[in-house]
Image 1 (cartoon, one colour):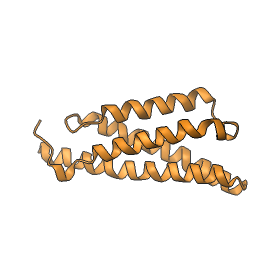
Image 2: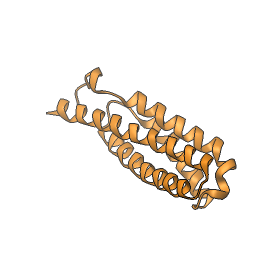
Image 3: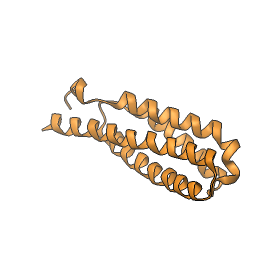
Length: 124
């Protein structure tokens, strides 16, 4: 596979977004744990998956960008759902944390998609 033109590779930013999101989730979990509807084990596993994907993201493997888009999309839905639900329940801190995480994943989807597009165009 040819090299990806630098203007189409945003994997480094996606890596940073995933790591920052995982760190926020890890640090915030003890504070918001009782409000999370999922078992704590699933939250910790999600943190590990994000960190693992951040480490795997690279410009030579297209499959990891597909996985990044999938994981970021699922995370966006989960965190935005939690944000909307907590906004209606008047839990301000939980709302802000979830809304911020959802925004990080929205940006990760966008940048991963741009990277994937660059890989696909370059492959032709």
